Image 1 (cartoon, rainbow, N blue to C red):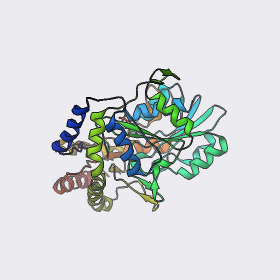
Image 2: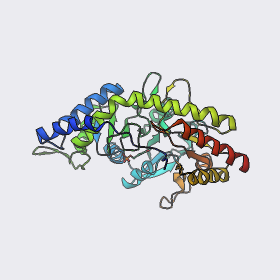
Image 3: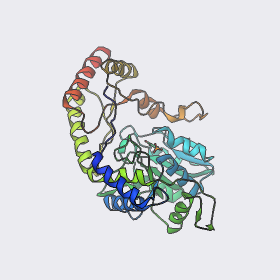
Image 4: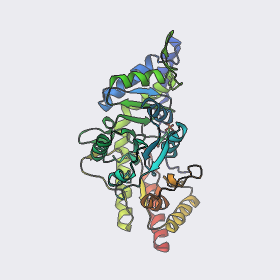
Length: 362
Ligand SMILES: *Cc1c(COP(=O)(O)O)cnc(C)c1O
């Protein structure tokens, strides 16, 4: 079975070296030495001023929402993983969906202002598939209306915009290091605070029950991560450049065959250094997507409908926002297998199956 992704694993010998360190110290969680080492190395690798390693990307979003005291309405993208929306609901905010651009599939800045009301407190946008949002226009609008900005950067590890990490934008950016992501720590995530020191301290307290030793400052939650997960991160981090290069190579192979069939891909602007975290491809209609997905499945090739449904259509959201672009794209987009080690013969096979199904259904 060829899956849409395959978890990258370091050599077991490399991981064992870290396990021995953990056993020697008998320190397995609560901000142990490997967690601190991973934070330092991530900061350096991504060229950031700060980063807090937390238990997952969803808790990262929830802590960010809580720490910015968001309430009322939050403008957000309908085209993302479900956690972007549910983290708002979980924190008692009302998601207001702003449609996406048909080129980047990120939130459309030209549609943000008309969605702002007296109840709006923030914008929560996703750099979907690692393609950056229009951070400059979003920032301008946020300043004009005094809105907070959170970027769900779960797909954007390693993506750069104008030469620096995309994570430097927004009041807060969050990452996911889940096993299916480009860089992973089995389970894990991170919070990057871009503006004030007070917020950084608050977030650090929030992720560890709100106390330091016997001093109880605030209510908190348990968002800490552990030494075993940090060890996986420390093993994988030195390989990230190689992982991105291998993904790029496969992406170009797909592009060469699929773009000539008339299939569309999200557009990259030339100021972006991309991380090749997913391979989404847009079909002419839902029928051709479903036929292709089924034909691939018959050949034991598993694809995913990332992201379907459009999040404004989730049954429990009870939302009447119309997002025509997102609703259309979500019906026609499919992510193809992409991971280091995927063989050229498999990508060839995938492309030839797609070429056949497209000819039949268009
Ligand atoms: C994976 C993902 C998350 C959730 O991260 P977890 O670490 O799995 O909790 C949130 N947002 C987006 C866009 C994601 O892809």
